[in-house]
Length: 243
Length: 243
DNA sequence: CGGCTCGTTGAAGAAAATCAACTCGAGTGG
DNA sequence: CCACTCGAGTTGATTTTCTTCAACGAGCCG
Image (cartoon, rainbow over all chains, first blue to last red; front, side):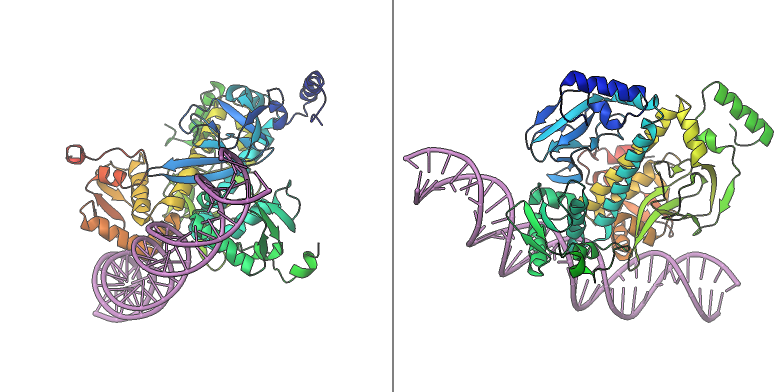
C-alpha cells in the first residue's frame, strides 16, 4: 500500500495509521518529497552534522570512509527500503553515495527521534534496526579479519542473493556495484576480485553475464564457501538447484 | 558516589535520583549484586537468548565470535564502566569472556528497556551508547580492511592509551590482554604482533616492560603511525612527552 | 628447581598486492 | 554505420607482506 495514488490520500492514510498506532518507521519517511540522486552523487558527507536520516526508496547506496592516501573503505551497502543513518548521534561517520541512480526520502533527526520516543510501536522497530546493523557490522569484522578472498566474495554474493528483492537463490543475480566498490567493501583489490570471480566461474559455480550480472549455478556451493561455521551442507546442490 | 555505604542507603539514593530524573544508565546496574568473574570465564555465550545486559565494574572483557576451524575474532574489548550487550535484540551475537579477573553487574533486558523507554534522560544516553559502539565498529572495519600490521598495532595502543582510566599518554601503559587476544582483535597472528612490537621497540617508540606493560616513549609517534588521515603531527613529540 | 605456558625470533612458504599489458564494451563523432 | 576512444575489467609476472612452521628463551607456578 501507499505505493501509488494521490498524495492527499497517502497522507490521510498515514495519519490514520499513526492514530491507530500501527505506524512503521518507513511511514515516517512517506511525508517527505521523493528525491532523485544520480549514480555517483553523494547524499551526505562524513563529518557533517547528521541532521537527517534517509531512506533508500530505489537503487543502491554505499557508505564509505576515506583514510589518507586514497584508501577507501565501504562499510555497508544499503538497498531499497533500508534506512541510512539510524545509529548516528552527532556527525555522519561516513559519506553516503549513490551506486546506481537512486530515489530517496529524508526526515530530520529531531523529528525522527521525537516520533520514536513517542511511540511504543516504533521503538522496538528502531532498536531492531540498530541490532540488525550492528550484527551486519560484526559479520563484516569477521569477514575482514579472518576470511580469505574466496570466502569474502562468496559471502558477498550470498548476502546479495539472499536479499528479498533478488529474483531468487538460483538464477540471475544483479550486481549493481563495480569491481572497485566490491573490492573496497571486501578489503581486497579489484584484481583479486576479478581473479576470484574467474576461479568460481572456472568451477562452474557462477557464470558472469556482462559486468553487472552473475548467473548463480549452485547457490549452496556459494553458501558452503562462505567460511561460516554454520554453513549448511551442499550435498543436495543438484536437487535444490534444479530450478 | 554509591561506591560504598550500606545497601539501603544506596537504594534510597538511587530512588531519589530516579525521582529527580537525574539517573544515568550506570545507576540502573547499581541495584544488582556485584558478581566476580575469574579470568578466562565466560559471561555469556553467542547464540544464547540475550536476556541480560552487563556492566563491567572492574577488569577487562572481550567479545568474540568463533568461525569454523578454530578461527576466533575479538570484535571488542570492554573496560570498567562499559555496558555489554546494549544493542542486542534477540540472541547474543558474541561470547563475552573475562580477560582479567572481573567484577560485573547485570540487569534484565526487559527492565533495562522499560527504564529507558520511560525516561527522557536515559534515552539520549542509550542512543549515545549505541552510536559510540557503532563508531567503534566502523573504525575497526577500517582497521581490518586497510591498515597494515604496524598501523593496526599503533591504533590499538593509542586506543588503550586514550582510555580515561589509563595513567596518561606518556608513561607506563598496562596491556591486560595477551598476544593471542591482541592478534585476534587486530586480525593478525601472535608472531606478527610480537614482531611489530619488537620493531617499534627497536625504534625507541615503546619499551616493553614485562608481558603486560609497555612504556610509551613517544605517544605522538604512535598516533602518527595509526594510518588515520586525521592523525595529528608529531613534530612536537619531545616537547609534549618531556613529562 | 623443573616444568609449563607464553612470548620471541628465524626461515620458508603462501596469499594477495602491485605493476603492467591487454581485452572488452559502451559511447562518440565522423 | 563504423572506426575511435576511453574507462572498466581481465590476466600475467613479480614483489611484498604476512602466515606458517619450527626452535628457542623468559617468566611464572607448583
